Length: 407
Image (cartoon, rainbow, N blue to C red; front, side, top):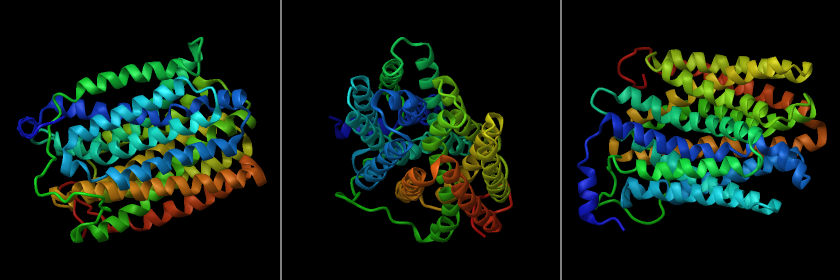
């Protein structure tokens, strides 16, 4: 149990390059566990006999776990402190890995997904703020990029690692989770240098739904459009792409499926870090245009059944999603006082994960009626339109590389 003295001492830890790296690692390693089953779905489908509709439900169950965790625990770190919540997320992620290790019935896959969703919900809200709070002097912009890149990059690394390990392991459905469990243990050790800024004595206790600060509400509404478009596209790629590659492209090797889905999230993380210095307006325009172009390529890939076009669509979509997500998060946190940032990041992720769960469930249901190809075409058109709406709102962001405020 963390005592008041221990919490007070932890709060005095300086923000250093080490603490920033440690906080980023903890966030990334938990997020890895949330996407690791994706490249393994073709193997699970062969073992348990389910199809693409069940795969989308498994992904939606994970998103539901994230949403429940955000509502229940999103602002709890303001009361208990940041590090206890990070530890809880690591423990839940370890429990998820353990369930997948022993999964000999399909219902255990659902249990594992719920646990990984609960872990992700804690880390998306608390972990994002912790990365920001561990920024050394003059490194706030880097920390903002790392906060979102660790989140999205962790999703990509989970797919890549699981696909690569499964490809070479004699136990492809177990070995990836052994590796992840070891990485999570390292994450527990990495908590030691992380700076503590939570545990405010006057913080309200009990269940609290996140509330937006009056100064950031208008900006939040504008930024949320990009987050909705980006996360909905990421959900479609992560849930439907493995099935499409297997049934249409006849590609089921875990390493190839893992790479195709990793490309989306990996490019997203690279784009966030490499372009972080551009103005918010420029990034929103670039991100929305990339996302819309990705949907055009996705439609072309679905009609031509060409793997290279699928990969191009994945990379371009990842870049667009990452830039929209990072810029929206950066803008709303800068516009929000420090004491209210946990609430605004929780609200931002709630909107984002709702935009994953609803389209993914709808896509899974539609795919049973019209098939994966037509389902992909319908959602490519719809999400391309939402990306254009985000593009139209870019003028409301600042065009300066300096202060990040709403005009």
